[in-house]
Amino acid sequence: MESTTARHLLEPDDGLAAWLAAHGQAAWRAKAIRRWLFAGRVMAFADMTDLPAAVRAELETDFTIWTTSIATHHRADDGTEKLLLELADGHRIECVLLRDGDRRTVCISSQVGCAMGCVFCASGIDGVVRNLTTGEIVEQLLRLARLLPPHERLSHIVVMGMGEPLANLDRLLPALALAQHPEGLGISQRRITISTVGLPPAMDRLTAENPGYHLAVSLHAADDELRTRLVPVNKAIGVEAVMAAADRYWEASGRRLTFEYVLLGEVNDSPEHARRLARLIGGRAALLNVIPYNPVAGMPWKEPTNDARERFIGVLESAGINVQIRRRKGARINAACGQLRRLAARATSDRPPAGHSPVTQAKQPKSSTAASTTPRMPPSHTAQ
Ligand code: SF4
Image (cartoon, rainbow, N blue to C red; front, side, top):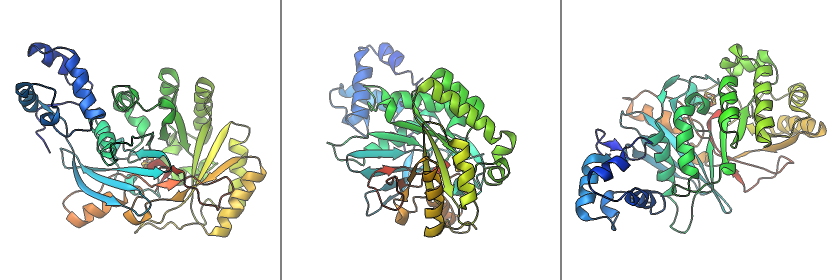
């Protein structure tokens, strides 16, 4: 890890333009530096070979590119790769690269830990520690992009790792803007999904400011009693308010909504639960992602049986709901929410386990049991 006292080059207020002017360098050099970072995927100023050597040396002194270091790097047989990143303050976050056909999807974290407290999520167990900075969010993208061979590039982003993205919009939105920028990663906004447990004021802010993202709302239950048990933050919000905010987003964006539903064995997987869910989301241009729970060591929740899952899906499809079931990807690298981080914390025991993150699952065709090769992301919100 490099110095943390220098300015972070991946922060929006890095001061690079002013620094270049003060050092008698042309303004276009800022663009060139970003091109080296985002398209060239270089690690250090020393590798930016079209900059004068003296300038490179001075940049090295005054700026830092990387504030994170890779604590662990896991690869699964299905091509999924997961990084546990250590931040400058010692906290750790997870991010994941998913490969599926031509798609190269990354799942990134937005906070250290999470305050939402979803009972089935390893990331929320210890609450939220802090928001990630814009630079820390961008670093996840760059570190994952560097896992690809030079001829491949990231195609999709899902913000479903550790943390509630809408609780950190001030830092997330500039990071996603950079991801979209032609001089950044050039990823279309339509290929960026923000997942939320459903925070109406923040959803309304996104509706007003920038409704071009794909929004995925994690429900996990269709009634307040059960949802508050599973997603405690629901107590102060209520399903009705979440759905109303989702509808306002849809009206502004015109983009199909996605709802996420983690299927927990013998908790929310009965035909009656499916009927309630169909009544709740029916009539909308929406997709329902059903995610069979991925068991986490030390947590009491069970994976639903195949029969229960099929019955659940059957009820929804009969009601005309567009359903997808996600299969798990990267299971052997602990790609479920917060698992890797917690395991690492246990192993070192000197750092508190915090939030959660990616789960790594893939879309399946509508009919539920057939495995798809289309990855869909991982993590967090959706649980596990
Ligand atoms: S599932 Fe998402 S919103 Fe819920 S505790 Fe985990 S990270 Fe937070």
